[in-house]
Every structure is written in C-alpha cells, then in structure tokens.
Length: 294
Image (cartoon, rainbow, N blue to C red):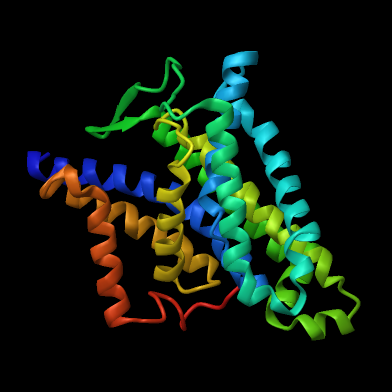
C-alpha cells in the first residue's frame, strides 16, 4: 500500500472513530431540542459527571471503566428525569426563554461540585488496554477508541429501536411533532419530556464513560464538549438525529485530517472553521431540510 494513502486511511479511521463519540454527545443534545425545544447548556457537564463517576468507581471499587456503564446509564437517566420533572418543567410557558439560564446554572452547579469533590488537577485511569493498538489491513487502531466506537454504535442502534419499534418511541415522536395533538391522543407529554431529557443526559454520561480511558478528566472538561455538541447538532440540523450522527463523523474527520496535514496545535479550530463554512453555505445544517426529525 502506498505510504501516503495508508497515512490518509489511518488518519481517516481515527477521525471517524472520534467523530462517533462526538455524534453520541450530539445525539443527546439534538434529541432534547427536537422534542422539547430546550437548549441544554449543561450537556457537556453531564458528560464530565459520567467521566468522574467512572473515575470514582475505578479508584474505590476497582471497577473496569466499561462496566461503569451499568451504573452511569441508569444514574444519568434518573438525574435527567429528575431535572426535567422538578426543575425545568416548573418554568412553564417560559421554558424556551428560560432554559438557557436554567441549564447554564445547572452546568455551573455540576462543574463546581466536581471541583469540590475531586479538585482541579486533571486525572485519568491506568488500564492495560488504554494505550494498546492492533493492526488491521495495515492500519493501526486504538483498542480504547475502537471500543468507544462500538459502544457508540450500540447506543445509536438502541435509540433507533426505541424510537421506531416501541410505543414509547411513537409517543416521543408524536410529542416532538405536535405536543397538543399527542395530548389529545392520551400521551402524557410531561412524562415524555422528562424521559427524553433523561435519555439525553444518559447519552452524555455514556460518552463520558467511553472517553475516560482516552482523556484526562477535570471539572471544566464539559465546556469543550458542550461546544462540540452544539457544532455537531447545528451541522446536522437542529433536532435531526441522523444529521447529528453525520455531523459528528464530519467533525471528527475534519479535526483528524487538519491535525495530521496542518498542525495538531489547532485541532479544535479546524472543526470550527468547517462549521462556519457549512453555516455560510447551508444555514439550516447539512441535513436540515432533507432528513426528517425525530
């Protein structure tokens, strides 16, 4: 294989696997917006919560990071359900206007609790497979990144089955399309909104668990991923789940290619430049009008 082409494939595969995690973060944000029209500025902080929960379980119980999913998933869902049912729902008709301030406040609470509980020093975990790689077709693949990619795929497939193969999924889609019409058909939209917010937080927590073997955890790490989640969501079209997946893969690919061919020092900047270019050419996002919403 030509060395240049091999390097290109290597960079592309790494970018797509990273982009899959971005897609997982973006899907949670997009799902919440698609159903509730709420902009969740605390989304990245819930991802940080998942990272630190995994860190805590690893250090205290020596629990493998990926087994932490069994804890992070239900706790993330429960936290999101509680926040929507007992905090955001109380905003009433002012939800759309006040959600920004409310979720910003929640994000500050989460990040400061993590700061008080774990300190400001970046922390990570030492697991044997964190730096392991294997070769497939001449391409080196990180074991931790591949597991994260598989976990992302499983979460996306699971959400798709929930939305399109269950009665709950039909109620979620009905609430997203016409809340009043859904209520007239007997759907409890308040409960559905709480479930959706719980799912969004759970997806963020899952992403945090999958990312910990790859990254350092620190209390404000969520700020970076909140920005990436917004980029992914807007790239794919607000409230568009398939678009969020494509947006995540696109962002990961752009960052990886830019880091390899230009400089790794400006990795985050490449995605933002691509984001601005897409907005200039298609303000509605890559699939804002061509792919249906939830």
